[in-house]
Length: 343
Image (cartoon, rainbow, N blue to C red):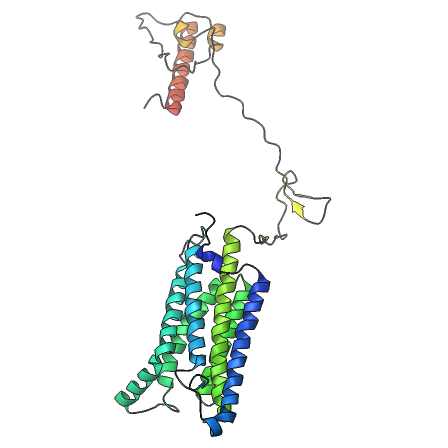
């Protein structure tokens, strides 16, 4: 099973293969436009061929546009399946690929069934006005709003790959040219060149859209595999030297600045274990020199020594020894609380 092809293997990795597919797609567009022109020359004799008529709904041009949109939708789904596993996408920007796949799929259905033409006729009958031209504005405005929202957000997510971003911009330009031609802003209405230009722009837009999805799919796969060069962050040299000990030194290899930390000194232990004398071994009558050498033990089994009660007045040496024992017991309690023994 490990040797079987996967779905992501359908996306080509080599740019030469992608270039050949692009040439094949644009060559198909040019061939369909040339066949339409040849049909117009042969029409007075043999009539029109429905398969070669770019202005009809049952021609090869309409089928080619549907195929490009459907393939772009499937490629966007593949990109989504990989893009959603990116670890630094905390806000979930990968969901735009699912929206894009849905949009391309609905556009392919519209291209095959001409749903926009039915919507145009219905709005003209309901409102009683065409607004502009033949009434194509009724479906061009919603198309432009949806495509502009999804396309701009998709372009923002594709900004790191300039190849796919450029292809997406070319696809948007072709769609804009087709819309301008449909409204009669480029060539005159009813001209044969208008039909060929509009159909050619639509087919070329589908080719560039599929190219954008494929190029970014290649980019996402290579990025997930770690085969892309890492982008180096810009070095900010506008800093001040706070201290001479912490000042960075310039490396001998080039002009790059390297920060050098000052030497770190290991902290000395605050407590040491004493095996000679313990707090319990001290007495109120012990000499002051011996009591000064007593260090508290870190063993949890040692309990603080009890101070015996006396009825007579303590001497000066006994009071000094008693203060030292009380100080040792206080330090021992603090140590036990730090280590969690007193909880």
